[in-house]
Image 1 (cartoon, rainbow, N blue to C red):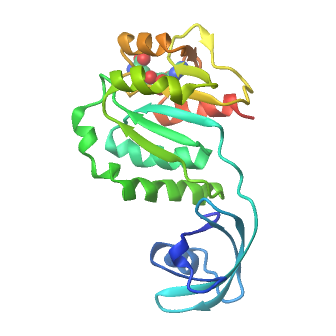
Image 2: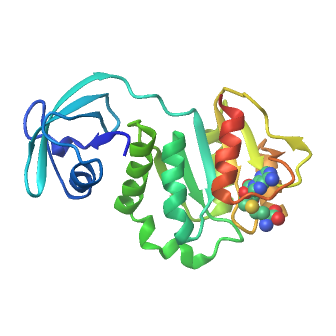
Length: 236
Ligand code: SAH
């Protein structure tokens, strides 16, 4: 936890918050902080600053908060990610928030198993919890929006044009002739396939919408590594 991330309902006074549960345990038992200690602090989708511990109880802690700084803004990126299997999903969501994505569409693809869509980890609150962990790690407050789209074809045909308007459109595809751009530093929409890869029909559909297949080198990367690799090439 590199930032104590606050929700509006943590406030019990204008500048006083009361924290229990996981964040309490972390501050008291892992960071071993006590009265007078300071912590970098931020409000979800809001400013950042510092808080000072004013009271440590058996189950909760109170801090006085000063919020006088802006959070690092999100990267101007929308990722279209074929829904990963549940075991990977949690980590990938954390990773996406950690890297600073603005928006993530979890989309269907031929090689996404139908059962993945039933995962309890897709509940709104479960997604939010993973994103918060990624932001705490990053030290930022801007929560990525996560949107689920269970049907590939209508998504690409009816929605994608608007989503990708005025952005660089790229699909990460092993073996593509074009290497992923370096230091693009402008808004992008990036499609990343499932573990089994996009099928040719899907790559064609994306190409019809102006997406260029790009490579990240000759090694086939895990999905979460591919996201990290492409973002670190595009944004410096
Ligand atoms: N089995 C698939 C690989 C899937 S890897 C195949 O052989 O094609 C999962 C996703 O990560 C891919 O769909 C792609 O979007 C991305 N990816 C992984 N390694 C990549 C690379 N070297 N270049 C571009 N994209 C890559």
